[in-house]
Every structure is written in C-alpha cells, then in structure tokens.
Length: 539
Ligand SMILES: Cc1ncc(C[n+]2csc(CCOP(=O)(O)OP(=O)(O)O)c2C)c(N)n1
Ligand code: SF4
Image (cartoon, rainbow, N blue to C red; front, side):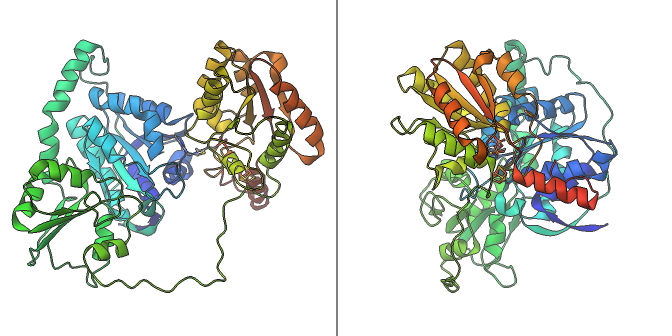
C-alpha cells in the first residue's frame, strides 16, 4: 500500500477517511486543528463524498458527530484538550447513549502549554466517561488506531476517545495506508429508546455501560496496542504510555531496553499485563504525558510497598512535557545535554502583527480608560490576548473562551463600573453570546468590544461563524440599537474611536462596540491565492 509523509494530525484524518468516515465536525484549537483542515482539503470532501465542517464550538461539534453516529454512519469530532471541557456535557452523556455508527472523539493535549492555558490530561475525561481510549505512540499507530477505533466503537456500541499530544500531532513520519473501507449506509439505532436519556432509560443504559467495563478491559488486554516486551533485567519494569514509549526507546541505540517494558496504547489499562510486571519486577517506573493517571491507578491496584516511580513519586517532573533526556535521567543513564545556545540567538516573544487591527482598538481603549483606575478590562482568547503584553498592557484577564463578558458582568454587577469585555468574533459565537444575553437580562453596566477581524485568526484563519451577523445577533439578544456601534480600527480614526468608547463607558447598561477590519494575514493569504489562481489555503 501507498506510504505518505503525514503529521500525526493528518494521519488521524487520513485514517478516518480511509476507515469510512462520513462526517467530521470540529472547532479549531492547537494542536488539533490540522485534522479537520486535512479532511476539508481532501479530494473526498471536495467531491462531496463526506461532510466536513467547522462548528461554533466543541459542544456543537460533539453533538453533530453524535448525530452522525445516530444514523449509523462513522463520525469524528476533534478538539484541543480545553475544548473537551466545553464538550463535556455531550461527551459524558454520549457514553450513556452509546454509539450506533462508529464514533471517535479526538482530544489533543498540550503538555508544557505551548499554546494553552493549562495542561490537563484528557485521559481523565475518558476514565470519567468510562469509555475505551486510544493513545498512539507514533503517526503510523495514529492512522491504524482510527481504523481499530471504529471497529471497537461499532463492536461495543460506544464512543472511543483518542488522546494525542502536541509533539505527535505536529511531527511528521511515513504512514502506510490500509485498504479503504466503504462508508456505512444509514441504519437507525436498534433500540428506539437508546438515545432518549429519560431517567428510566438512562438508568438502564448506565447499567449497560457499567456491565461492559470488563469487556473493554479484556479488549485492552488482547489489543496489539498494549504490548508486553520482556527482557532479562527484572530490577526495573517500565510502563510507557503513548508517545512516552518513543522517549524511552530513544535512550537505547537499538531501541531495545534491558528491562521489561509495558507499552500502553489502549485503556482501560490492561490489568493482566500490569499484574505480570508488578509480580516479576522489583520496581516500576511509569512514563506518561500529562497527569500521573497510570501511576495513581497502580497505587490503588496494589500498593503493597513495592516502589512505584513516576510523576507522583518525583522521578519524573510533576508538570511539563516529557522528552528522552527526562526519561534517561529517571533511568539513571548518562545524558548528553548539548551546548548552550549561542548568545546570538535571542528569544522572539509573540506579538501582534505590524498594522493588526487589534492594535488600534487597544490604543483607543487605553486612552478612553485613562481617567479610570486600572484593572477593568476582561479579555478572552485569541490574537487580541497579546494585548496583555508591552506596549499595550491593555487587558487584565484571560481565563477561558467566553469568560470576558461574563466576568465583566460579575465585576460590574458588584461595583466595578465601568467594566469592559474584549472578545473576538469567533470567540463571541463560540461562547460569548449567552454571556451577552445574561448581561442584557440583568442590565449590567458593561461595555463589550467585539473585535471583528472577520476570521478565527489565532488558529490559522478558519471561517468565523460570526461573519456578517454580529450586529443582528446583538440586536436579537436585546442590546439596544443606539448602543451598538461599528468602528474602523485604524490610526486615522483614533480620536473618533476613542470618543465613542469614552461615551459608551459612561452608559449605565450594555453597549457593544464592534471594531471591524480584516486580519492582515487572511488578506495576504487571499492575495497569494488569487495570484496563484488557487483556492485560499485558509478558509
Ligand atoms: C475551548 C477552546 N477552544 C479552542 C481554543 C483555541 N483558540 C484560541 S483563540 C481561538 C479563536 C480566536 O478567534 P477570534 O476570537 O476571532 O480572535 P482572533 O484570533 O481572530 O483575534 C481559538 C479557536 C481555546 N483556547 N479554547
Ligand atoms: S494574525 Fe491577524 S489578527 Fe492576528 S495579530 Fe496578525 S493581523 Fe492581527
């Protein structure tokens, strides 16, 4: 079969298409974005053979993918780890409804927080939902696991969580393709009650889920993705999960360890393999990205005094991404640290592009707020979060998508007047609209600036669902028309913009100001595409 050089994300996308995917729904978020982008640009999507779509947020994506599964077809949804928090209600309940057609939820974790607010471990969500989980160690496994994931999803009638991390998502390797499977035809759920989670049905479904746990573990124990690699030196046994297996074997020239290794790629944990290792080896070292999930489970399983080492115990740092050197040190190996970087290499902190529209919004806002005490601008997540840095120092919070308007409302309701919320157009339709409705209902004195650069810039310029709709959405949510304004964030209109913001800061109610000018990068991408007469890469 053909071999392709694919990113981990692309391997998942190619795997899904080849395994008979019918519909993929996602909200962008690093490091998961390239999965959906690959499918969107695929020949199969362009020929209309499958449905691929960005959604308003991760919850709507999760529910749309569940809808694909409901009709018996294979669905996928992809998100970054914090996106799974947004999708959690649907995700946890999908474990109770179960799946009809195969359903895979991909959650991409970001240990070391390369581009995230936290480094939470999605495996806890998988355990919480009590569904099977897959964790690839390389791009080939990522591809193969999608095929297998759909098999077990359909065999057990349950969604499957695939957990990846940044390093795997964004590194490239040769991936051998498999035979392409046809998509499923429409087939309605066998039981008409399956998806109706009224308490009486839900209780039955939950019992089924509990009853299936042993079968999921048995499947894990027989899985090709959980391998016990035996060796003579039983002083140590290493449990290596997902990509941590690569970091382990990179420390050994022929990739052969002198001690037994249990390579984990599937959960629930293969209990039998773990018991074997625990019985045979004097000491266990657990290598896992994220939280000490396996280490904690081991302590629960059989804490009879045998040393278990890992993140909890301290042999591995409690936070941050793993790498071969961290693993080598935990094994007591001599590590080559490499030379210090040359003094000529200077750090390049992130910054707004020169001429970015957000710059002019912040200049006007800062000046309008000059006469008030500091600390009243609640921001959200997007390129505009860089307004926290010099020279702007324009924002005072960034917590999660949507938290700008709601935090400003809470603060304003409790005496911080004026309070300002700064939110991007994509973040507004992701989870700002409900907060704005709350503010309207309680007539909170907040000034909301929706920075409309007509795209989802931070994640690469995906289509923004707010495009062309913002004023109407705000009107529909009840913001008074006299207090909805558009401004052009450009130096030429600085005075005018500043006076407008000043005026609305004094208004005792909800006002919305929409600075509107397109992101420079999407303009550049369009011009490049027009010159080459191709469709813009960024859509
Ligand atoms: C729950 C969640 N999903 C996705 C992301 C990734 N993400 C960060 S900002 C952003 C969108 C930013 O778009 P917009 O609000 O329009 O601001 P812009 O970057 O265009 O200025 C996304 C998708 C995230 N941080 N959290
Ligand atoms: S990508 Fe666009 S929105 Fe982001 S900083 Fe650059 S110009 Fe501004």
